Length: 130
Image (cartoon, rainbow, N blue to C red; front, side):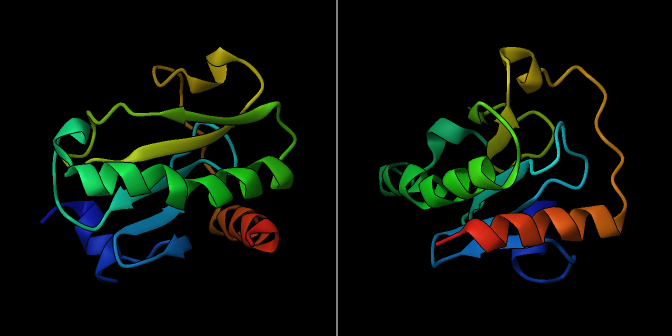
């Protein structure tokens, strides 16, 4: 069982943003930028493009209102998308408020946000989620 499956099952606490029968979205606790959110299918599949077609088709539709909420909640040019998939063997999509392509540079250091800062970021996104 991956760490993401444990988060989805509620065995590990998270800053949940949204959930439906197929997906779970939550804040990355080691974000590149404040508001960095992960969208994870509830099925455990390592490689993003091995995820069943119905999930891939629905993933962006699930992520769209979250991305719009991130754009409204944090000053940015847009919400960037990235699929890297090297750190956790469970397919996932990164939603990150960006101003330049460099904001999606995963080789840069991650932010160290306090639980209070993460809770505030969660509340900002949830406040704009429709």
